[in-house]
Image (cartoon, rainbow, N blue to C red; front, side):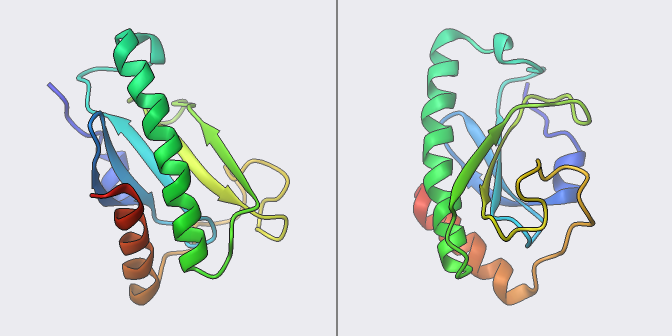
Length: 139
């Protein structure tokens, strides 16, 4: 049975569900950033997914890339590069980060983790980012 790790609601906003993944917008306005969490009970590693689920995850990562680009465009900060990462060192539940990057972002060219403090979205920007992500994902 799938249960969302409590770390995700504490640091992100729900976007919706795709065929495999629950999608969330990371609560850091510095980066257009989606997190995909496969709705597979106790999955911690990619190897915990069946072969067809891994293929579906890859397809959903590509869709999330388009959605992150849409969020970046809506924020008037078009993405120059996409970063995709599956780490799980802090939150063990299997999840994939899809992050829009620019040469003028706070962490460029380093990874975003551990660079400064997250900056919350103001309510208008949050609504705009969520609407862009939902429209791009069709959720």
